[in-house]
Length: 95
Image (cartoon, rainbow, N blue to C red):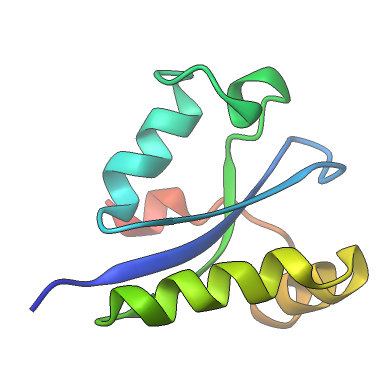
């Protein structure tokens, strides 16, 4: 069974948030951190994984991504703070 992840990345001072989905969180976070794909995250140095959710249903991950993107910035910050109050980079825990 395949896993899918909805995730939030932030920049160094947590002033920019990026929301995405992937089926390989380690690989995708590595791509963001190393600017391997020219994108929003490379432009704004959004390299810190601060939140993620896992599901085995691709449609659920897509729906959750849309829900998070539609929410206010404060709701996103509250979600991150509830699960990761220090806004630590969670990437090392994945390795």
